[in-house]
Length: 503
Image (cartoon, rainbow, N blue to C red; front, side, top):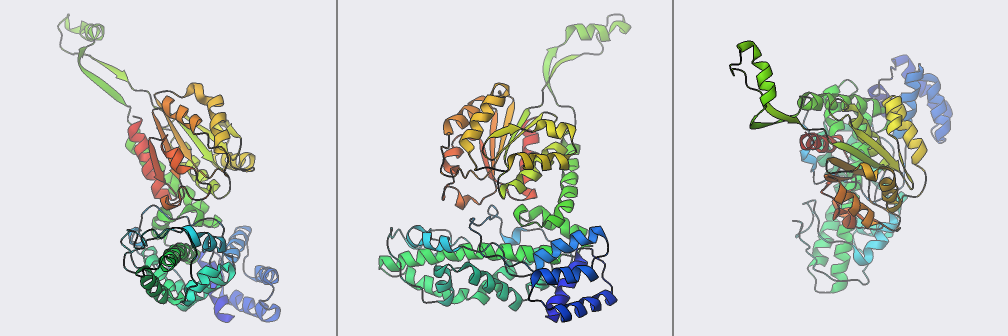
């Protein structure tokens, strides 16, 4: 109990809550008297002795909820970044403090284990699994059918799909390897491997390797299933390590925090870090504005502007000394942003809209649309409100309802279809999960035919496209560009390319 409380107080200090030694002793006395069995009672007791101002109270609430959170495995598929390995994150100097949160959030789910018994993918793209982990399918195609029970302890856990037990196991493994000791974000891969090893990855890999080499189709089907479940677990463990780093990051390590926030998945960012993200978006936007704010012209060299040349040379008694050449200004492209604001996708929409409207100096003609089912234009919100207020209003007005991309595309054509032309860029942000409704690819094709470019930004990893109710493979055919976009560095790269294209 004492160690957990010490780690929590350390995490509070990293969240810029000032806590004196006397207040620390008061916290220990409060816990001794009240105990840690009742979560709400514990929170109220510590809130009386640790935070002192309204701002610190907000930081305390966020930190307490993150530290003492124990969530079962979510139903959503893993939200991996697009091909960026852990070693690809930025290196920087700084330290994370002591601290260990509660159980992991977002590990593989029970339903997923059942669904993979017949059709889970083979291969192990992470590169540290059994033979054949080079991205090729080592299991062949055993086809649908039954699978056998796993022999390894971790394999049995994954097949059983007990989300609470797996979440607890990840949390305990994190404590065993001291994930709170992570110093820099580039160690995410190291701690991910340590936790996976503590969970029993070695025995599971050996079992997968043995099953994959057998001639029996049931064995190979089991190997494919276990490989897919292991990949889901590894992705969830990565998310767990990211959250622990965010919880314990040094509040004074601004360069480290900024470098980390550029690469971390937006869905993993705690609400208390949104202010840091906002400042980072503003800084990135200013850099792009400086690079692209020069007046854009295209000179038609070789074509003399006769009347202007004569006027410029009147002072020379008609001698042609200063020549004027014809030039035409290239109008900036209209940008139409269509954002799915339902569920977890709303976080990505928040920062894309913030980014776009921070670039007003170089992208003054942005029209924004939001939807979950019915689509509506929200441009006016950003014209008459501060960005934060406009985003909050947009999410409040359109985040409810069942996601329907087919209806949204029809609404967009009705509201703004006549304004889309060969100088227009349409950006669609969403996971393309249509709840098994009509995808209405015909409407998207019509947008594609009208616009100069259609760019789809999907926060899900590419390996999840087409799974379940995802219509991404069908929509992809009607887009000029498709990108995985779930972190600020992804978004900056896409917006920078957009600015180059519309000059």
